[in-house]
Amino acid sequence: MMNAPIGRGKRRLGVMGGTFDPIHHGHLVAASEVAHHFELDEVVFVPTGRPWQKADQAVSAPEDRYLMTVIATASNPRFSVSRVDIDRPGPTFTIDTLRDIADIHGPDTELYFITGADALSQILSWRDVDELFTIAHFVGATRPGHHLHDPGLPAGRVSLLEIPALAISSSECRERVAAGEPIWYLVPDGIVQYIGKRGLYQRAED
Ligand code: ATP
Ligand code: MG
Image 1 (cartoon, rainbow, N blue to C red):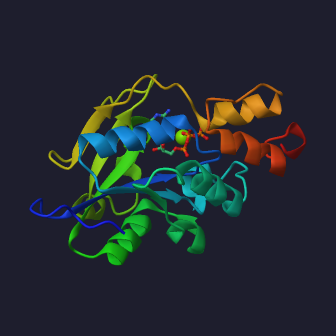
Image 2 (image 1 turned 90 degrees about the horizontal axis):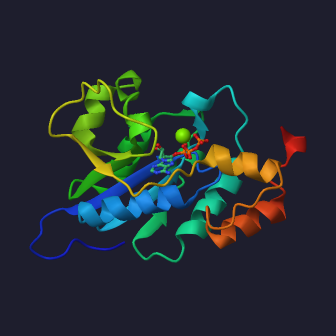
C-alpha cells in the first residue's frame, strides 16, 4: 500500500464501486481522471456482491467480475481491487462498502467515492445517506446522456467531474457480445479474451 506524500496530510483513496459486468474503458478513464484531478494516491475498485439495484436481472458470477476487474487494473500501480463486497453475504449497500474500506485503511485515509452521475442522482434513495457523506467525499463522473437534475446533495461533500465523452456501458458490451459484434477497444484486450474463454454473455445464457 502506498503512503501519503510527506507534507500533504492524509492519504487519499478513491473507491470505485461497480458491477463491472464487464469492466470497460469508461470505468478506467473515470477512475484515472478522478485520481488525477483529486490527487488520489490510489483507487480501489470494488466489484459488488449482489447489487440491490439490479436484483431483478441476471448478473455474472462474482468471481468472473472480480477476475475481470483484476485483469483490467493489473498494469496500473495506483489501481487495486478489493473483495469486501463479494465476500460479504447478502446484497451490497454502499454504506457497508465504505465502512469496510474505512476500517481497513484507518483514520489517516480520506475516501473519495467515485460514481457515475446517473447513479449519483439516485443517491438520496440509498441506505444511511447521511452517514455516507461523513465517511467519504463523493465524486460524480458526468457521462454522456446523463444529467443531474435536482441532486439536493450536501454542499462541499459532492463534486462533479466531466469525463471525456465515453458512451461505453457494460450493458452495451454484453449486447454486442450476444450479437456477435466486437468489443475490442471498448474494454481492455485481456477482457475480450477472458469473456471469450469463459463464454460470458452468449445469448444462450439469457
Ligand atoms: P450497466 O450498463 O450494466 O449499468 P455500467 O456500464 O453502468 O453497467 P457499472 O458497473 O454499473 O457499469 O458502473 C459502475 C460505476 O461506473 C457506476 O457508478 C457508473 O455510473 C460508472 N460508469 C459506468 N460507465 C461509465 C462511463 N462510461 N463513464 C463514467 N462512469 C461510468
Ligand atoms: Mg450502470
